[in-house]
Length: 174
Image (cartoon, rainbow, N blue to C red; front, side):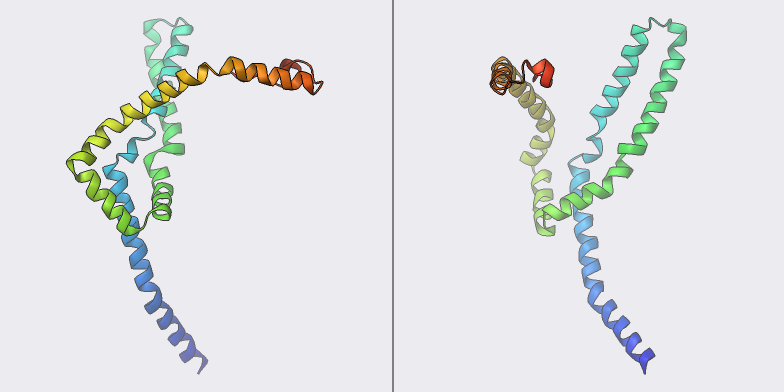
């Protein structure tokens, strides 16, 4: 009789969990569709570009002859491979899907997909990288004007606490 109960419990579990697994698979599929539409697989492209520039800069600083360009390219390829292991799309995609499914319902993801497939949504996708970069530049420029005052406040606090100059107790804000 125990075997019968075990089989019944297993059948009940399978019947109950099948719709949940289907819902999860469907939810994940919507997240993947949205991420593809939003070009999330390109999120790390700036990191790759920055690393490539670092190697090129180091190559230039070393005043390496043009005949050593193959060495530079070899190291850049190795760096790309290292980045692929850490932040390649295949590595971060499962985490991105989990992130989006935990923050958006399947219906919300469908609505986002509908929006980003609309003319306005396509324009947002096209303009967003530039707008984000320009917003960061604007913020950075405004922030730089506060740095001297923040550094002065750090110095004043250190003096008031009897810690001396910020260089002795820690580094000042940039």
